[in-house]
Length: 258
Image (tube, rainbow, N blue to C red):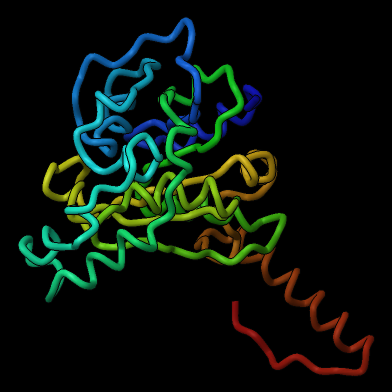
């Protein structure tokens, strides 16, 4: 379970859209209401952020392909043919879109029947995913937290359509943090879910403890990127130490301007 100090750290980012915890469930959740809306899967994240309350959805709440990615329904033959992607003008022929349907990450059919959406501040369970929607400055902090301890590379894996598969299923299966940019994906753009240019960061349970430690421990403002005299002095002292370390080991570092 995410500790209160970590919840506060994420809240202190000041994201316009609050972070949301997700849980994939085989059995119907107890003591949590079912959403009354019928929307696309990507819209339920925004609904949770707008309402500030927990809810769950099932296959009947979702009117798009999120339920296919989650295995709530088997893949549909017509959708998998790729015809729609060609008719939308996203792909030259049906074949590239068909490729997406064949290669997109999906969960085993019937293994997930319900999905809980919960604002991080109110989360009292171990999330399968934590989704952060952030501007670039906030995303810089979150992404650095994903590599501050491990040194993991930052990767973005997605597609023009079915971004739900890459945002929700791929991180869950791979254990890798994934990130995308709003405005690049057909379904969310058509529905105007978010303004363009925001970063959607998906943190899977495999990385969540590490990220929570890092975001509390690491500096949010890097001294080398600051213009104040204190930061410049600090960096000058550290760089001078580099020269001493290199000299002590017989090498030489060219002069560096702070």
